[in-house]
Structures are given as C-alpha cells and as structure tokens.
Image (tube, rainbow, N blue to C red; front, side, top):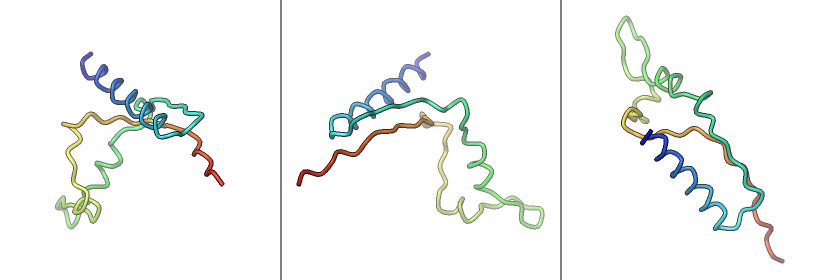
Length: 84
C-alpha cells in the first residue's frame, strides 16, 4: 500500500504543477495496467551469435526500473494562449 500511496502523491503533484504554470482543461489517467517496461527491457539486449549483449539502445539507456517508482500515465491539457 505504501508504493500505491507514493505513486498517487507523485501523480497529484505533476497535475498540480501543470495547473500552476497555466495550462487548462487538464485530464489525467493512470495506464500502468496496460503499459509495462517488458518491451523496453527486451529492446535493451540482443542475441549475437548465441550470446546476450547490450543492444545499441542498451548501450545508451541502461536503467534499472526495479528500484524506481515507474508510473505510466497520460496527462492531457491545453496550452495557454499567448497574449497579443
């Protein structure tokens, strides 16, 4: 339950900041149930001649998602109009 609580606090803060900088019509939803790191993890390595090695992606973007609170979500908002 602690992890879920932290995720909700982070999500709420992100939406608050977007609102504070003037964006309007803000809507958001958590899509963690349908989006995972599995495909990203698979793209990090490749089988070369029977050996597992880092792919080009893995060489430059090696992150350990096990220790981070990953939140997959969607936030939509409208950019404020520029004043003339």
